[in-house]
Image (cartoon, rainbow, N blue to C red; front, side, top):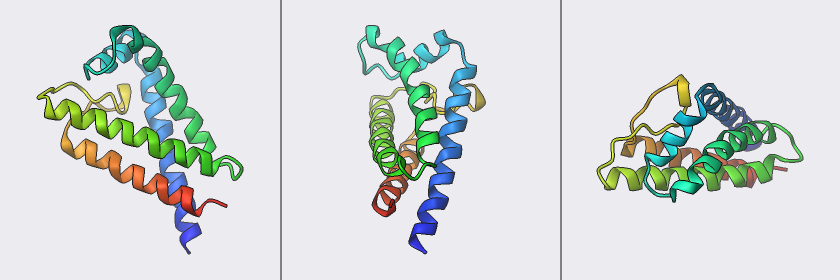
Length: 135
């Protein structure tokens, strides 16, 4: 049963990553860069490459989580990505920032909050479960 749960979790994460990537691709490049800069973590010169790379990585993870040969590696990458996202969001909250998290791009505006950081930690745990149960 646990493998079946992990497969359902893979589908859930696929939907989340696909929606997130799609929402970001709907945004202008300028808006995506602004979302990255809103966290005030990275040097300005890194904002554009990160703004380009994140939705591409999310799209790759959406595909990789549903291919048996790439599921484990994609789940490990997903865990790491969710931990980075959660840390960035928690950092923003602790510094009193109120920027949009940029999580789903043009599909859904959402401010950084501890709730969003915890959501990403839960998704990291789900990703870890998938990695452990992957064949």
